[in-house]
Length: 332
Image (cartoon, rainbow, N blue to C red):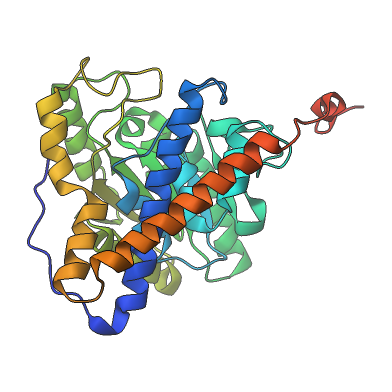
């Protein structure tokens, strides 16, 4: 795991921006904690994959994008939807399978869509969405707009043929796409030695003619700056970029997986928490005099109130009507 570099001083003129990043990361953390509780209580069905520890990647990257850019994610997408601006109440209602959810209760935890915000999933099959993102990049190029298609995926997806095929096409066709590998160290079903090998695959995948960058995924400002560079390259020259964000997730693969025990120790987990992205930005804000402990406590209180309201909204929302099951069925 790459160790964090010394953090640079914050710019006082960007205090509002830093506070927004802090609030969004905290919203993701508190939302995921509450979702975990609700799942354990049997209120959320199916699978539930939490994002706790990785908040800097989704929040930092999406903050560098425009509202009309397209976003594609895998099944660990609650954070990306929240960072994109989907209301917490709609995301929580979707986890509960309620009609008030962002996908009208049909998607659940792994298939969150918000078409109005160009947030196009939520894809459960590993690596399946990577070529779809390239397709969006091809559409952007064909329409001659300055949008960007951004695709988030885990490191295990680099073992899928579609990953390599898509990067090859994106490079050959010069598509305005950004591929962000959220390298959280443990691909599904892998052990540490295989995860280390995956690092190399992600890092060297750009034998294709495209820009690539490895960044500290536990630093929200580092991932933001890397994505901003990639977005500029895509808009100005219609060229793709692969970003490998080296991050760490504190939870198991899904709620069915123990936090530690199968493939890592409690000691390793506690050591990695010293690099917590939220704590890290908090310390920087305090050290720079851009916030007080009271200010940050107020943010946490406000975020908790928002998450509690989202939970109440989800619990009180109606289930989809049985006949809605057939709304998207094609009939001759």
